[in-house]
Image: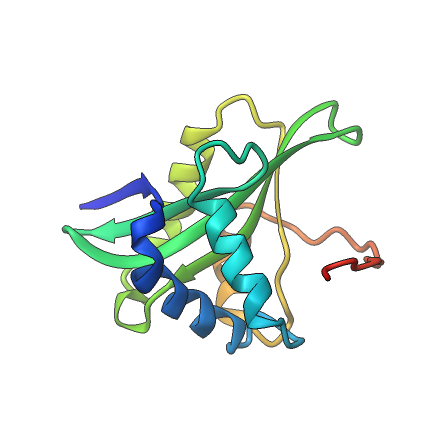
Length: 150
């Protein structure tokens, strides 16, 4: 059975190796400083942090992966947008339909959301297919950022 629980600070040794795997996979197309990944974990595990929610994904009581989720307002849809920052399943849990269950859980967990949004690299075609099966479609915007991470 697939379950979700909020990440706790004591989950550091469990979650950060998965975060490291995520950032060294086809899901990410540029290097990210490990200090930033640590800072993000601490924020995701802090219930007082209103912007980032970290969730541990468990399958039959075993740690299967994690989610990082943020929320914002989307003027394009006139309401709440849930941004799936990171979604990761350990390799041994992939290909079992858990991705479909995770996507369905997200919609059920955020019923007021008018949009669910995520980023995906073209190199990660397995994820692209999962998201398309869940009803996601590409927005053909070019994304620009100004990072001030230090």
